[in-house]
Image (tube, rainbow, N blue to C red; front, side, top):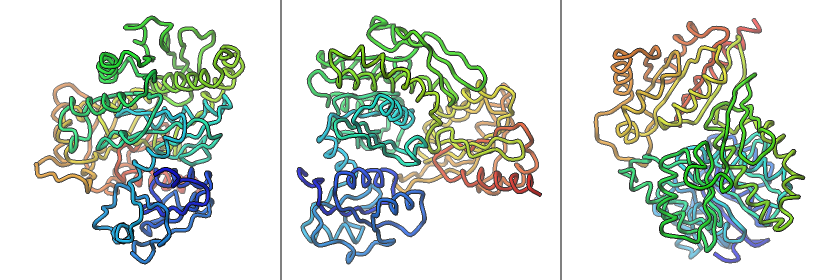
Length: 494
């Protein structure tokens, strides 16, 4: 694929509205390529970004759309080469056709690249890296898996062409296309059961990814996460040349404190989280809730300072003293990313939030963080499970993940076209399992509404001033939060 991204090259993107596809399109445009594409007619938040970039696209898939002179055709993994008419036509025309992940991998070879990976936390860690890198004036491009407020509502941040930091995805081992010199590993545990049937299978995929690091490469890993620590241990047994940098409360357990980013204390006060790192004279402050966000910030600091050291070499100490005040300020200003504890607004005295958490661990840690951050608020949760295989495999873990909520509304499972499930688990099964657990030891009040908007009457009559209402999951129950926010907003004006 060498030369395909050069200035003046013509690149056609099938599924161009996808978050990752739009982000890559923006990076390619910045590099001088001519980008066009196609997608479905449904309006997505990326429509506005594509228009700002002057990227034209078709709102349908037709073989006649494919430019005969295209130097490269990139397609989202959602589209099959044989079934999509544009991809089939491109192949018949002899054009170079690659998946998004392969294109991203080839793009990463042009830079000093760092990949951020993990079952949880990779989007927030990538976003935090972006704001820290900007504060340190490093010549880098950053690509996150979601829109970030600090990136101007986009998924990319373009600050220069020397370094590249990107969120990399484990599903179907997509991250094996990426070519990192550094990896941040946030977490490893069982997930994507349709492709990784056991914990060992997903762990081994992360091991395989880390072994792609070049001679002397850097593995930054969360010491507080059992799976990440185990993965790092396996990698370091196989590769003595890799530099290990642990971060977290347990980061000094296996290596001396000066070798990692050891969190020595965390305090929550006045809707701020203050944390302390060994070796740093002053604390760091976050206004995004949760201890898991503190871990993400520590990992982002580890990577950002590693890049700063690469950039300044022997002058690193002076550069760190110069840029650390701005980096601290950037952390405190960070407001999160799209669907990651995203504040929708406040209406009727109720705070409305939306979060992408769709794994039991993510649900549990997010709710713990909210409970600590907003101790006086009643927490009301709408949760929509994503994929039948994940729900079935982690049914008990899901049922136990809601303890820090006061009231929970569950819905049907948001299905995935990529899985073929023939078991008997559904949304009602999770509701019944949660009630079983509640009957044995208390817990939140549970309700069930098959369709998302069926819960509107219940919540309109139950939500009250001072509550925090949050929608969680990878499905479309965010629509419920928006509808309630609009309802209470209009009632305020009446």
